[in-house]
Picture 1 (tube, rainbow, N blue to C red):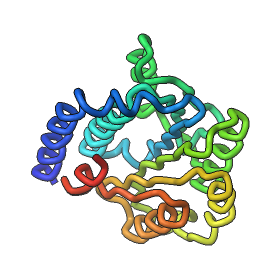
Picture 2: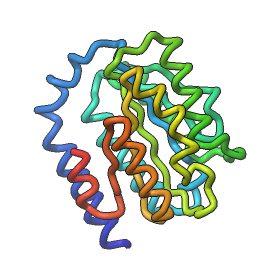
Picture 3: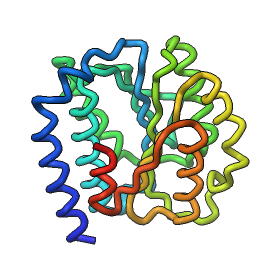
Length: 209
């Protein structure tokens, strides 16, 4: 696992160097009504320093690829208190990033589940009059085989609403995630028009970029 992590971190560093002069000039043109919502299952990553390092690398790459775009950050266990919308090129974004880092390590509460959180996100995006090309990313390392969200039929009703609105769900699977749950998340992304990224290998970051 340590070799994988080092390989991934090297790849992220290389990708960040490569996109610095190429990507921002294109991505920064995105209209402000196209929001990116990032849902983080912080309870699932807090027990693994490797996953904490991976998610920090992922966020650094993510913000560079989508520089200038408005983000909303939501914790899976506390979806009613979003952080944002905020643009990554704001002068005070470093302060927002510090708040996010603090939130990632804060004590988590019992999760309302992915279905409930996606319902909150749906209401939030509606309230913000988000554009049809807004996207949602869900990041997890949940190892629970009894996770209620591991049943696709529990997620399908809210996914149908997101499909109607044109808001795809992308899923980011970290090392240690229950394989069955990972397959469900793949189905979630396939159904909504998103993609699923498995960051337990360097190929996962390569696919993301």
